[in-house]
Length: 90
Image (cartoon, rainbow, N blue to C red; front, side, top):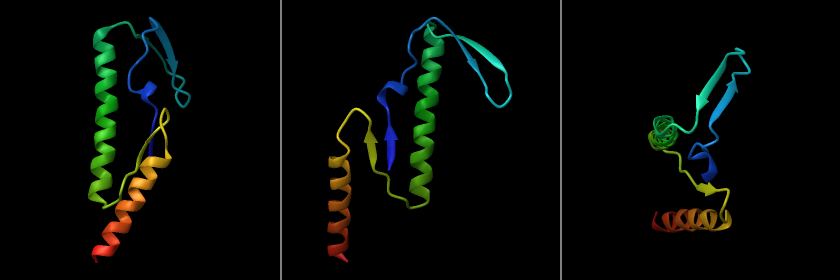
């Protein structure tokens, strides 16, 4: 099961934002108003999602995507119904 929060797919436009890496203590200041920064953020999010999907496919692991702003019951029911149908065909 993968849980996706749609609000994490785009970088909010809050102007200058400071981020601190808790492991290294390195501080990074980013202008979230910049269209380039926002595009790069979205591209990174998409790349990570695609890499996860690719890895799961290679490992033959089924993914059940669930969104935090939606119903989690329907995707799970759909997955288990699909599994049941596959089992009957064998």
